Each structure stands twice: as structure tokens, then as C-alpha cells.
Image 1 (cartoon, helix red, strand yellow):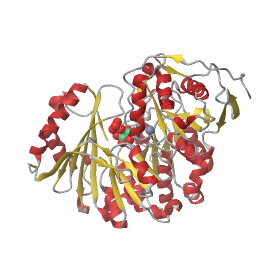
Image 2 (image 1 turned 60 degrees about the vertical axis):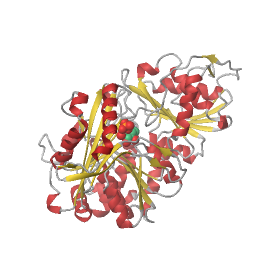
Image 3 (image 1 turned 90 degrees about the vertical axis):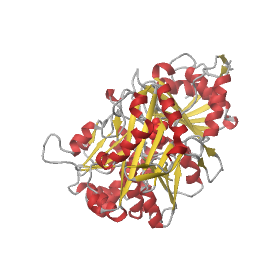
Image 4 (image 1 turned 180 degrees about the vertical axis):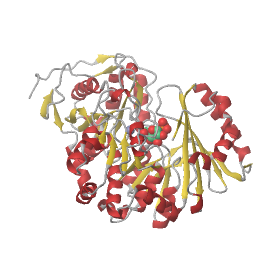
Amino acid sequence: MRYSKPIKVQPVKTQPFTDQKPGTSGLRKKVQHFKQMDYLQNFVQSIFNCLPELAGSTLIVGGDGRYFNRESIQIILRMAAANRVKKVILGQGGVLSTPAASHLIRKNKALGGIILSASHNPGGMNGDFGIKYNISNGGPAPEEFTDAVFEETKKITQYHIAPIKGIPLDLIGSHTLEKMTIEIIDSVDDYAQLMTELFDFDKIKAHMADNFEICFDAMYAVTAPYARRILGEMLGATDDEIIRGESLPNFGGCHPDPNLVHAKQLVERMYDIEETGSTPNFGAASDGDGDRNMIMGDYFFVTPSDSLAIIAANAQLIPAYQGGLKGIGRSMPTSQAADRVAEKLGIDCYETPTGWKFFGNLLDDGRITLCGEESFGTGSDHVREKDGLWAVLCWLNILAERKQSVEDIVRQHWAEYGRNYYTRHDYENIPSEAANALFDNLQDNLSSLVGKEFSGRSISTADNFSYHDPVDGSVSDKQGIRLLFNDGARIIFRLSGTGTQGATLRLYFERYEADINQHDLETQEALYDLIETAELVANIIGYTEMNEPTVIT
Ligand code: G1P
Ligand code: ZN
């Protein structure tokens, strides 16, 4: 269908904004901030200005369906047309999970994609919104590109937009806008197809039919239709087994972050808080845009770092990875559990800065097959984003093969490799000045900390992590302060790059325990020494004026 004759587009004059610097994962701000006149338009035009090859190319567009998604999509489509994009492939209703968008970019050999999401941040009118650009490999644009976009945003004077309104986002099929084709496709089809190519669906389905109950929490977010199709229609999960299973623009007023705090209903079911006498065998949740995952067993929580290590150790049970793993990537603050698996498998393990974009080169260069972050992100070379439902299917495939409980699988893993006790403490929404002062002070004291002893272990290295990308040689400095102890324990300090209010201080604690008789400690107790050491070294209470973290995972 054609809406109008091509019209000669006049550029719209605009003023730059000074705060459009993309963070760990694109530009994230409050919805109301994004709604300022020309704010979104400036950023989108700045992306387009950095893409000289845009004219005549294909773009994938979609978002997690949060409040302001549809309005933004309308604007982006009109701007794409005016900037001479040849074709946009759009998820129906403007909806695509982040991994599904990554897959579509790769499958269609698109120039890239625009993904609208603030991931696990709350949505709704007063919630957060976000936008990021992914490149042709399907992954988040590297820093070089996001820096260039930021430079553009500081000097932009005009943008291009086609004067056409009301593109029917829900109508599957091919549409024409100016000279641009918009192909609106089912949001789930291609992704579901990809999953059938990676996993043994018959085996998982048979296992799920055999007295095996699951509970998947879609958190009223983007994975709802994906889970209903894949776990429900294709693998036989009943409606009861998928909770919060519809997508809502405000995520039902909830915080769509799959952790023990925000996935409360799931946690209560897995620990049978209501004393029904039965618990599901497997529990999982995914976040706002479908790239994160949390994995649980009955009365059991799997830390994301362990999950990565266990998927790697059992990868030969999953059809896609039967040929072996090339290597494993993990972000620096993620526990070293995966390193032990890599060592045993005789493959490399890479340590990258926080943020998925750093895995892109390693995946493209064939150096790693699996990668993960402690922040509930796990993925593989099938796309270039972390992938929540993929991780769920990994576990279901492993469970279908091993026919053991989640807890037994994890405990056997610890028995074989040892246990990496691990926790993260977040101090959210602290004044930026306080956070910076804490960091400056710690940074200044780093050299004097080396050799100092705390609770029987001494600091062997104290530095600010710097990453040298082995593929393109780029260097990323100041990626987090590390205190490495002589027994392998670690304390890491970082400031979040995804928050939209104040600063968030993240502290990561890890220690290794080989002795199987010591594998039953409560995590916070097991790490208590290190938590105390962090306070001694960094004066967290003093700087933040908070007695305890706001979130512990
Ligand atoms: C957080 C996580 C990080 C993840 C990012 C995007 O970033 O810590 O691992 O890649 O969200 O999902 P941060 O807020 O710590 O910068
Ligand atoms: Zn996310």
C-alpha cells in the first residue's frame, strides 16, 4: 500500500542537547526527558549522520513495547524514509525482543538495527526509555561509533523527517513510505525458528510432558509472546506455567529485572512460600527486552556466573554446541567459575569489560562460542546480544538429557570444579559527587593497598581494569577498580553506566572454595570477610551515607 506521493522533504531546524552520551547500552533517559521536543529526533539523526552507507540499505527496527515505543517507532520510520533508507523490517506493533532484533539483522544481512529499550529499567509514563544502534553483525555498536554519535548530537542543526503520519504498525505485510519499503513481520516467527535449529525440541517437549513442571515469569514484558509461543505452543507448557505472561507498556507497574527481588512471585513459587506442597521443577524469568535470564530450581537459585559455567560444562548435550566450544567470554566482574571449565576443556577464557558490546569482536573472530555476565546475561554466537529465552532453553535441554534436578546439577558442578561464592551489592541513586569522591579516594590509595593484609589474605593487585581488545587492538580504560587477593578472592568497584538517576555504585565479591564440605554456606556469610574489607578500604558508609546496599544479588 502507498500512503502518498513522494514529497520533497524540508529539513527541520533543531538545537543540540548536551546530554546524549550513550552509556553501557545505548542512550537511556526518563520517558519525559525523551519526550522533549526534538530529543529523540536529534539522536536518531545523529545515528543516521554517522552512517554514510544508509541510503539504499536495510534497517531492522523494534523495541520492547514499553510506553513511548509506538510513538518513537512512528518518528523513526518517518526519519528513515527521509534519510533514504531503502527498507525497514519492523516487528509487528513495533515489538522485537533485543535478541530477536539481533537475529533479524544477521538473517537479513541488514546494515544494522535501531532497538528501543531501557532493558530491565521500569517503564510507564514516569519510567525509563532508551534507544541504541546495533551494527551489521547484530551486536551493539562499538564505542568508536557511539562516541561519534555523541559528537554529532553536540553539533546537530537539522534533521530530516517525512511529513507522513499514522503508519499502521500492526498490519503484517509490505508497505511503502516515500521511497522506502516497510516490511512488518511477526515478532516471534524468525526467532522461534532459530531456537528449533539450536535445541532438541522433541527431547525437551517429551521431558516437559513427563511430570516436569516449569514456571516462567515474563514480567509483563517483551518475552511474553515469545514464551507463549516457544515454551507454550511448541514445548507444551500450560498457561499456568507462564506467569505475568502478557506484554504491558508499563510492565504492570513492576520492575522488569529478573532477580530475586523483582521476580518475587516466581521466587515464592519456587520456594513454596504459600505451602501448597508442590514446587515447579524449573523456574526462570526474563527482563524488559528479553535479553536477561534468571534460572532457578525448586528451592534453589542459580547464580548467573554459575549458570554460564554450567552451560559451558554441559554444552555437548545441546545440539548446537556438540561440535565443541571455541572459547568462553565473561565480563571482568563475573565470577571465575567459567574459567575453570575453560581450563578443563582446554579452551581460552576472555575477560572483557562490562557490557555486551565487548563480546562482539571475540564472537565474530571465532574466538568464543559462549559468553556471559554476572548481571543475568548469557549468550552464544547464535546472535550478538545476550539472550534470555536461549538460556532457558539451554537449561531445559540439559535437564532433559541429564534428568536430574537443577540443584543436583549445580552441586555436582561444584563438587567437580569447586564453588565460586559470589555476590553483588548495589548502592542505587547516590549523589554523583559522593560516588566520584569515593572512587577518586580509592584510586588515589590503590598503590598503597598492594601487600596489605585483611582477614588473613593479602592484596596482590590493586588497579583500574584496562581491556586490550585482542581482535582490533582497541583499548578501553577505567573499567572498574579491582582488588585481587593472593588466594584468588576479588573485590571489584564499578559505577553503573545504565542508570538514569544519580549514580549507582556496584560492588562485586568473589572467593573460591574447593572443599566440598564448605559448599553449603550462606553466600553473604561466606563473603562476609570481603564485604568488611571493602568497607575498610573504601569507606562506603561514609561516602554514600547508606548503611547497606539497596539491592543484593
Ligand atoms: C548493567 C550490567 C551489565 C549489562 C548492562 C546492560 O550495566 O551491569 O552487565 O551489560 O547493564 O544490560 P551497568 O549498569 O552496570 O553499567
Ligand atoms: Zn535487557
